Image (cartoon, helix red, strand yellow):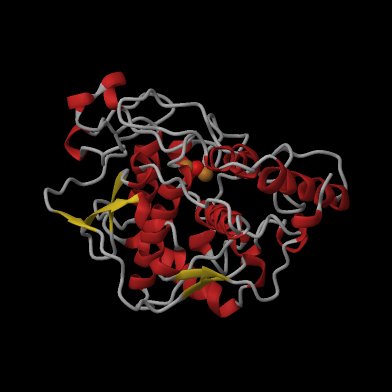
Length: 345
Ligand code: C2O
């Protein structure tokens, strides 16, 4: 059976270390089912390194407004970070009727990884857009799979001009060199060597070791299953590397980016995951005639709950997020190269 949506009324408020607070959302007994927007204006997510100053200002303003919302408003910036904490650090259980293994919900290490994070960013993006009255607002993506975009996007490290995007709890060495996708840690390699290695990493995880749905998407995870340890190539590889790269070694648990509970407190999280989401999109496009999505109804009918820009609690299904254009967004392609398709090591 599919993974049902979490039961908010049984959300665990005390998760133990390293989680220092409750990340349960406000409860709401009215749940609406997601319906795809009709004729949505297209949102085009820009590559972060190509974004204009005007874009960065608007984005900074939107995040500032999100930070300024009342602490218990589900659209508040900290509340947005709690979403990740709750789905990933063990706060949620589905109703226990068939609750073997306690019915804990976990969206990493299995086939829910890409769909969950796509939905998460979808609502985050809509909230930001509504706060600045711009229905075309789109999150940027950190284009770490191309040498032009491997450095940390500068908008996240400018506390004076873009204070809402700045975060102190990051590894302080990430601003001067390209991200190392092979290890997620600093090394003595030159930028050129890092770029070459990254190209091979991308080729590997997107092409040579990602030939089947399961190898790329992650292992099946159904109601009653123990949470599998079955991350796909991209989650295990570049995705984890960038988290580790950004997490602050001065903090106890690698906060913010280096830990599930705190990752969403860093605005750069959404920029990173925007590119993770783009990787899913590129991988699907490259499938040509091969099957692009699991057809298993346990996958397609798995559900999540998110608050939307109108503070409505929305129930979504995996099946409704497979095509980003139906959700009303796409990724900038102009001026962006995809060098790794030919980087056979
Ligand atoms: Cu839910 Cu990048 O992790």
